[in-house]
Length: 165
Image 1 (cartoon, rainbow, N blue to C red):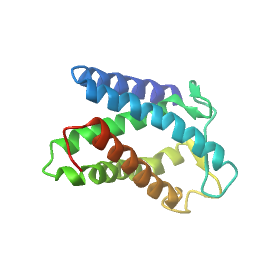
Image 2 (cartoon, one colour):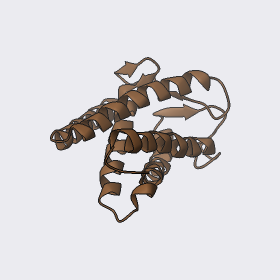
Image 3 (tube, rainbow, N blue to C red):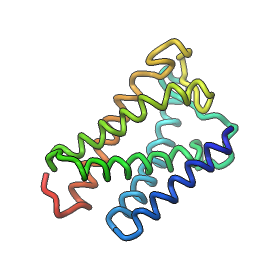
Image 4 (cartoon, helix red, strand yellow):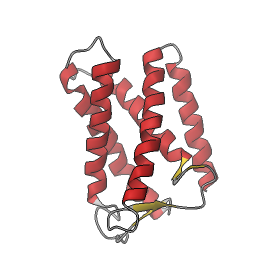
């Protein structure tokens, strides 16, 4: 099953790159999102090792970047890119878009993490399937909200220069 997930995420990532190919800004968003995810996920796995609320990924994945399966970092970049595109076509005021990005990304994570946990893609330290939010530590969702907000705020402020915040 892991190989199917990895291939599907790689294909989705390539589709995002194809979609963004005409916009250097969007390509930068995807690239920076990927780098941010690789660094953040690895630091989080290392710093939370053995602690309640920390997590570890299944060793059944085929491609890892240090402690994190490649598909996880690619999925971050996909979520960041899709959020950016959807929020940009909305009526949300520009000054509120980084927060809207973060909420959108977090809502997707809220929907996906309980399934991923039940499928054994990762395990939460100190949490059974009936603990937390369907087996997922609540601090995970707050973390997604904060980390994605910071990234999207900085990107929109410094890379998406024509917009003012």
